[in-house]
Length: 247
Image 1 (cartoon, rainbow, N blue to C red):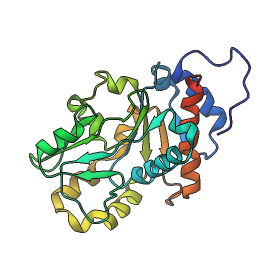
Image 2: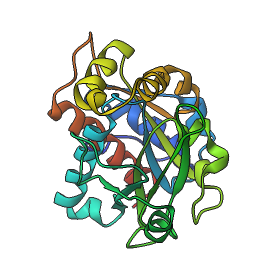
Image 3: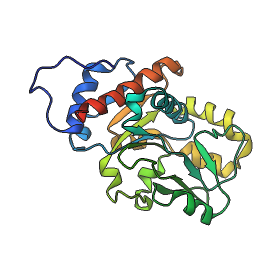
Image 4: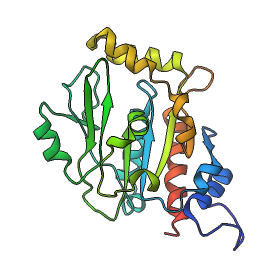
């Protein structure tokens, strides 16, 4: 994203509104849809959360975010992608750069103390806990990937910022159900029971669309976008946040 050409006074002194203006003029990939009304209620952006259903492709999106932040010193001055911690066994196809899997609640609590956590309900009475190790630099904007439970089970969200979700830019990674089902089953279906598969595939992204500030379409006409297109989208978002803060 290159800085949009705007006249002084055209952009409001409000981070959500400012980001909406910038993305409307600098959405280079065409994958982003801005929910202007939601952004107008987001006065300050302290966190970014990429939210999506199982198989939506949010791991690929956050991999591109991580790569951009690690390779670009100007982005690394403001953003940080903490490691995610999950209370379940590792499965085939899991991303070990993004995730760390733990066996006990005590280990989970120790790793995530001072970080973001929430609980996901699965089949029957079973739950899993998700969280992130604390940021290394508290001044950074943390960038997180989350399943829909961070919104549908928001009463379980714990973070140093007690008002975390009200200060978080929510980017919904949306993929049509038939595309995400194919991706999910190819990656994880063989390692899961029928009950868990049903819960994960039944967690449809469109139900969370009203919660999002930005919708990122991660499939067009049934096809995944190229990594270059995904990279352009997340770069637009990160650069837009920088400009909205006046950094």
